[in-house]
Length: 162
Image (cartoon, rainbow, N blue to C red; front, side, top):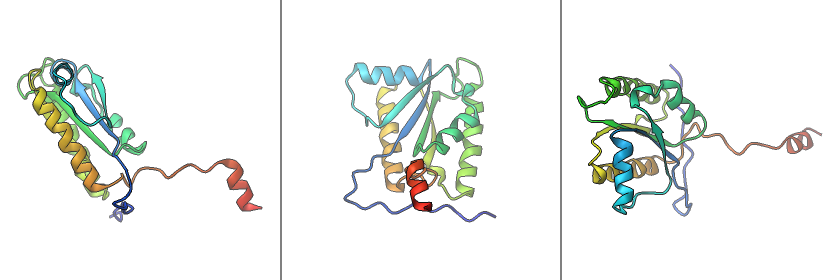
């Protein structure tokens, strides 16, 4: 078994904000986010919404790649169960997110960094609440242990060798 990856401690004075992606399906979750905007409901600005045709089209690679590129948390937001416009897309997405959550727990990253919610287009308050809960959860966890440190410039690397 692989040793868990540890998260570096974050000083309370640090103004770190987590980078969160919300994959939102077109018909329900994205519409709920749009409605939240129309109603001028506020949610954290550090959440980036990615418009997807269906959560069933979000492959495991998309989620894993985002984590490897340093995203601190991911919210997958799809249609209500039984109400997917692509029949079973949200059920496939649920299975995928559950598998990835198991993987994240196994490698010590924390399965709380990935969450799936099911919404209808009219559930703007629930969308805002889900986003806020995700930000609060990830903020408590700290930066992703998969986040790469600042890349070193080649000139610095060469100077240190000489």
